[in-house]
Image (tube, rainbow, N blue to C red; front, side, top):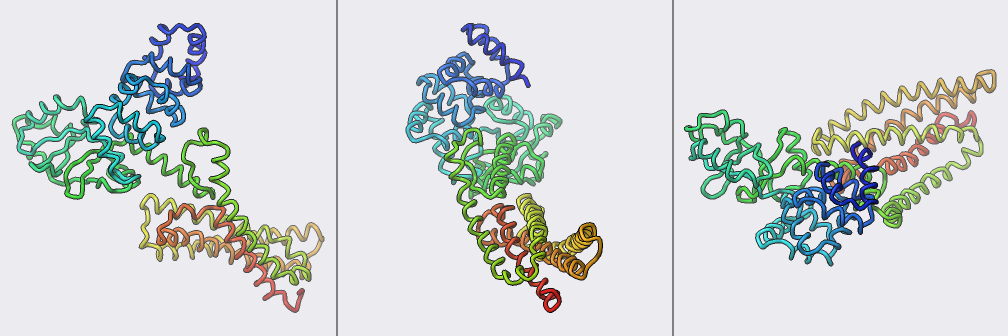
Amino acid sequence: MIVDLLKPEFDELIEAKDWVALKDILNDVPAVDVAKLLEELDAEVAIVIFRLLKKQKAADVFIYLSSGKGMELLGMFTAQQLSEVMSNLEPDERVALMEELPGNLTQRVMNSMNVSDRKQVQKLLGYPEESVGRLMTPRYVKVRKDWSIQKGMDHIRRFGQSAETVNVIYVVDDNEHLIDDLRLNQLILADPEAPISSLMDESFEALSAFDDQEDAVKMLSKYDRVAMPVVDSDGILVGIVTVDDIIDVAEEETTEDMQLMAGMDVLDDYYSQTTVFEMVKKRIGWLAFLFVGQLFTTTALGAYESVIANAVFLSLFIPMIISSGGNSGTQAATLIIRALSTDDIDMNEWKKVLGRELLSGLMLGGIMAVIGFLVIISWGFLVNGALTQELTLSAVVVGLSLIGVVLWGNMSGSMLPFVLSKMGLDPAVTSAPFVSTLSDVTGIIIYFSIAIALLEGIIL
């Protein structure tokens, strides 16, 4: 990485306090790499380095800093420096920053903005949290359908510098309602004297400012767009969402799902920025809940205490049985959660999923049953040197139990996401530990029920 190559020279120049040479180097280094270098410095040194950067470069570096380092530097900025950084941030970047600021810094940052920027931020903050409205930028280029293409191109040249992207140009009517969007290359390749309406088919996709940010991720992916228009409840164009913002949201959503599926609450910040106390707080809730859940496994085992006492060998196969159910349930839950989150399936398709998982559960259970039967027979033969009735019947019990627990794991793992979604909960909380705990309890019941049915009067 470029950071690793630069760091020795970077440290040497800081040690020598050669700020002139350092300034020349930093302004040629990508903003993301400068941010990485600043992360490892004490705040007092980092603020000095930050002041060496050009205004726009400083703003670009700031957005790549972790929230912890960013807050640290914000508290040390002069009023002028704070104003320069904020004026060079994109509107959506300002909103993202304001969402994370502690109360003591919020007013100071707001006061550092000019009047128009402050009103813009306040308007965007008026949209619900996690909504597209907070993600969008009002910096875009719009044209009228009755303009000539030449007039449209002149307009783009005049106002395109302040837009976040000019890859897509938006067509609005006299009341600012969105009526179409055009790719820039359509305008470039068209007859300059033709009207913009000649390029329009009035077919476009738009997001609502009140949509969830996850909807924006799905829409840009589905339609393979670099930007999408955002409209209000009246269809008036109020902003655009660009793919670079969506990448950040997609990463956050994926991280949240992974953490939920691991059986913990979602972290508020990056792992490296989270304190040990906060980490424990986020993990202990589910850990304690699952521990209590395992008490049901103990209770289930206790109910079959007399069976175990009469046939101790049955207890040898308990780990094999319950782990198979937990593993199949975790696989099914993971597949369904991901399919739901990517819109591969929707909530109304639960019956179709139920049928598929019933069939796959029977097939997987059948295969596992054969493997389990052969493993136990082979193991018993190697240990005892002969096949006994007890061993053969045990292998049959384990085989049938594997069919039952794998089938149950598949069914519960695949259906729980639908149930939780119906309850208004994130299906990702159907975590691997949760499904495993549920499968442990039911696995015990299935295993010993089959054992009693087949072995009663023979071994029991």
